[in-house]
Image 1 (cartoon, rainbow, N blue to C red):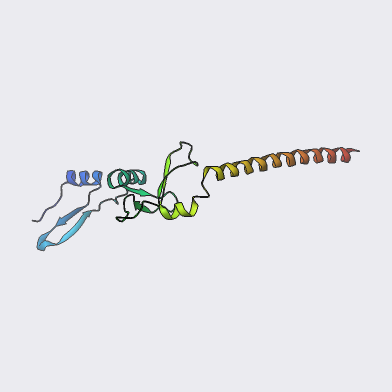
Image 2 (cartoon, one colour):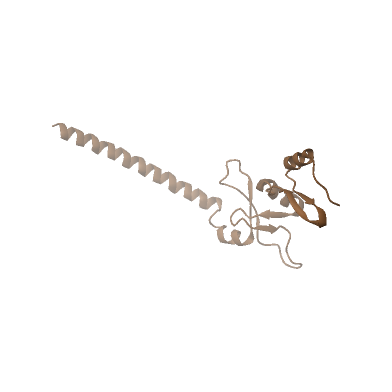
Length: 146
């Protein structure tokens, strides 16, 4: 049946982000108010998928994957949860089977330990070079005065 909206109905719809259509004579439709675009929080959406649907998002490729989509009779291999060594809070991160296979050797603790040792050695070398540079600058200043 034809209907026009009151100011109170229009204000309520705008507050809630609900779209409204008005049905006029001859069953003509007119959009009175457009709904706002639904944009859920990505973190809440990931949590909902994981807890309610057993779907996790890969930390590397960002694809969503069912945690239990293994065909019958096939040994469970592939994705899994790993401690996120890059996070300050040490949260767990999910890696899909493809990313796990591709990056597993890269992100092992021993490999990361070796990387940290190399970084420390580079920092020491940088410090020694900085000290040498200071020494040469002092010598250059002295020679410039003489």
